[in-house]
Structures are given as C-alpha cells and as structure tokens.
Length: 157
Image (cartoon, rainbow, N blue to C red):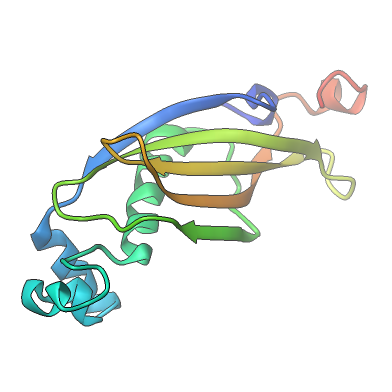
C-alpha cells in the first residue's frame, strides 16, 4: 500500500512533478472545454489583454490534477475530495511554460464521524520555469487510516 493519512505531515512541502504546455494542447483543451479566443487562436489572443495564446485555467488545474493523481495518490488510501476551497489563477500559462507542482499539507484531522478516515487540507502551487507562482489550489482530501486502532488511542493526529 502507498501512503495513508498517518504519512501526511502538517507543514511539509514537496515537488510532485512537472509538465510543459504546448500550443497544440492548449488549443485542443480550449476547443473542447473553454473556447475563448485567447485560448484558441494566436492572432485573436494577441489582440486580447494577454497579448498572446494562454492556457485555460481549467486546463492548468486539470494538468496539475493529473500529476497529483499519478505521482502522489496512486496506491494511496485516498478516498476522494469533498471539494475545492479556493483556486487562484495568478499569471497566464503560455506555450512552452513548464509548471512544477508543489504540494503542502496545511492541516489534517481524523473525522469524528469515521474513525477509519482522516481529512487533510492541501495547498497546490503551480510554479513556472521562472520561479513564478501561476496557480494555487486549496482543497480537502479524504484518506483512509493505515492503523485505526492506533489512531483511536490518540497516537495519530
């Protein structure tokens, strides 16, 4: 088994993975899910406030989610998420940009309604090749406990 609730350390921060965006994938995603001119067409995008083609914010979040699931949640005791608390798109993501996903554990607790399950608040930061934070996502994730008996005795937090 991969990591479980007990393995999450409040205050920890780790790089999970990275992805480089291409113009082709930006347009492909936008065509299907977010067909705004500055995501679809370089000429139209140049006339926009962004002065060039940019990835949809939903595209950047989808890419980060894919990295998170493949590199961190695969094989873990993850039980899904009750939702996203906050998303901030701080800077545009352009073709050729490489985003590095960093994940921090903000807090965690065992659910009072389920002694076999904990909930953690996680902060994702998408940081580009220039060291600029371009997106942040704050969410909750449910994780199963590896040792329910130990947790109920107060050893896990």
